[in-house]
Length: 89
Image (tube, rainbow, N blue to C red; front, side, top):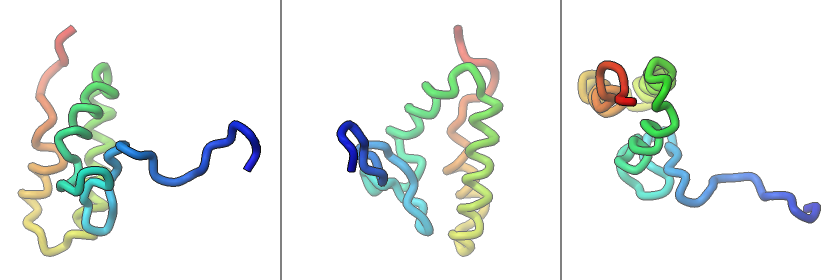
């Protein structure tokens, strides 16, 4: 590896999903975990629509992987926690 280059792979404390069970790769909770939810709200604070699109695509993938889970519980888990309306600011 060249000096200053970073190794590829999971970043510690990234709280990225691990598929096909859709658990958090950092804390092991169901993804998106509480930590990742906060980070996503911060990252997408000015573009909630983009956050909804991103989480909707994750929901679609998770629905395939977690085919025995009730769809309503997956909807709550992936998009039900996103605040409605415009963010304050």
